[in-house]
Image (cartoon, rainbow, N blue to C red; front, side, top):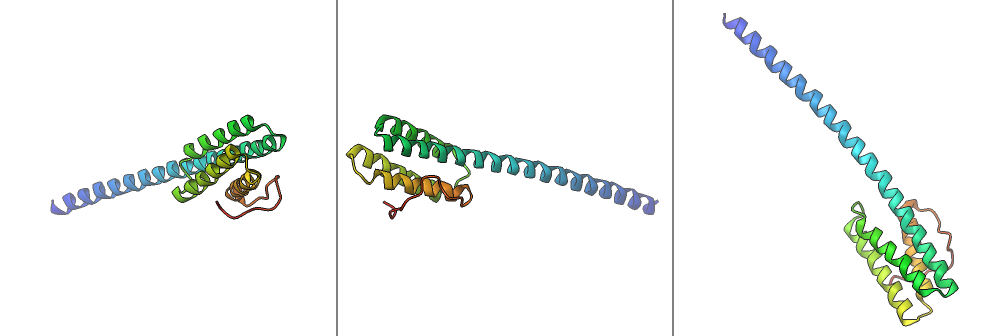
Length: 141
């Protein structure tokens, strides 16, 4: 009798362990899918930031300061929405964006340099691809 009870308890324990292992595997698959979706969303967000920054650079080159500021506002919104960037990366991009805005407001000729630095940083975050803006870059403001 004792042997049957022990065998029964062992089978119940083995079934519970098997069920737990199966649930863990399902959970791991769900986590992998979520991470894949986050990476795709992060890449799209970075590309969008880069496009808006380049549009701001083109508008600044044409002397359209209001359009450039609107594009920079869009970049700022995207930076704030990006939860996947490390905090220090977000802070650095935010500081660069503030420097560009200040240079535009002051009518400084360095606004283009600051904006090119921002574009270079966004290009680096996107995967190290070179930016379409080109040109020399200045040190971080």
